[in-house]
Length: 405
Image (cartoon, rainbow, N blue to C red; front, top):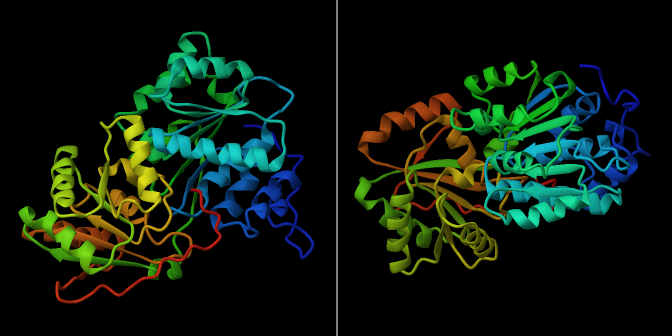
C-alpha cells in the first residue's frame, strides 16, 4: 500500500521538542497529551504512531493500560481531512462500553486540539433515530459496533465510500468465530481492501486471530511486553476452596483485605446473579455488569463502581475487554478463565499505569491442573493464599497517566 503520510518527518527527540511531536504528530495533537500532563509516549505509542502516519497496516499488541487507544487515535485524527464532510475512518469495538469509552477519548482529543473535526458513536442499543439525525452533521470519524453500522448503511443513512482507515479495537475478539462473519459483511460495504489501511489493537494476539488478521492485507505486527517493573506491581494468588464456598470466600476476603474496588469475574451470568444476591444479603456493596443486562443498567453499575458506591463489581468477561476503570485494587477470579489470554485481560484490570494490584483466583481441587497450566503459559507465579495470612497491602496510586488503552 502506498504511504499516505510521507510528508510527516520523524525527528529525533530533543530538549526543545514535545516528544509526541517528534513522532510526527502535528503540534495541536501533540499538545493534547501535554494538556493532560502526559509528556512521554508509552512504548506502544512510540512504535506505532510513525508507522500509522506512513499508511502501514498494523497489528499492535501491548498490555492493558499502556495507551493503545491514543496510539491509534492521535495519528488517525491527523490523517482526517477536516474540509471533507464524509466518514474517512471507522473504529470498531466488541462491546457497547468499550465503544463509548473510545468515543469519549476521541471527542476529548478533538476538543483539546481545537481541530475542526467531528466524531460520532454508532453503537447498537442506543437510539437509532437520534444517531441518524446526528449523522447529518457529517462526522469524519465514526466509532462503534459492526451491527449498528451495517444497519445504518443498509438504510442508506451511513455513507462509507470515502473510508480510508479501519481500526479493530480488541481485534482478537472482533476476529473470533462469532464476530468475523459480521466483520466480513461490513467489509463488503467499504471501499475495496487495497484502498484501506487496517489497524488492529489488543492486549492479546492468539494465533487464530493473527491468521485472520493476516488475511486482511498482511499487517506488520508490533508487540510490546510488560516491563519487569510492571510485572512486579501485580501479585498473583490462589485460594483453594470448594466450589460451593467460593461466594462466601469472596465475602470474607473483601472484608479481611479491605477491598476498596474489586472486580469479580464469573464465567456464567446465571452464577453471577446468584453470587450477587448472596453478597448483597451479607451486606457487601456489590453490583453486576452482565451481557444480558440493559445498556442503562450496565452504565449505572460502572458509574456506581467508579464513584465508590460499590465495593465489588461482578462480571462475565464483558468487563475484561478494554474498559479503563481507575483504582481497582483487587481482581477475583471466582471461576477460572477459559484461556490464558482471558486471564491476562482480567488481570490487566488492576495494577495499571504505575499502580499496584492483586489478582486472587479461587480454585477447587479439580482446578489445580488448570492453575498450573496458566502459570506455565503466562510465565507467572500464582502463590497460595493462606486464609490466616493477609495479602500485602498494595496502595493504589492515582498518578497522572496516559491512561486510555
